[in-house]
Amino acid sequence: MPIPGSSDPAFRGDATRYNPEELLLGALSACHMLWVLHLCADAGIVVVEYSDQAEGEMAEHPDGSGEFTSVTLHPKMSITDVARISEAITMHDKAHHVCALARSVNFTVKHQPQVEAFHAGVGA
Image (tube, rainbow, N blue to C red; front, side, top):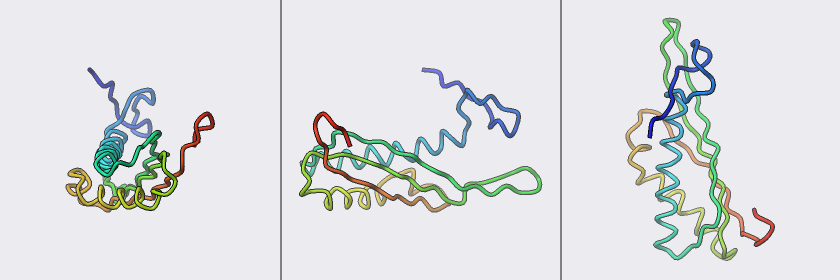
């Protein structure tokens, strides 16, 4: 499936299309999420909802070049068993250490997870 891409609007890009920086943040977020879901499934932790708001810090240089200096993931998930919230948070630490993308970049990737109990009909 084609992904419509462009540069960032600050560089005369199309804001309705994905830019490479957004795609990198999305890839880091997705890698982390997939590992967390895998680890939770192996541990029998039922994840009902998952979202993330990844943020990146960049440095821009006088010549127009730039680079990421850090990324922070803000995963939020709901699980069915309130007694396992602490264990579910630990899964984020484990995922961070095995995610190939987080291990491959030359900047810090942090995570600040929130785990809540899911309440049917209310959402978390």
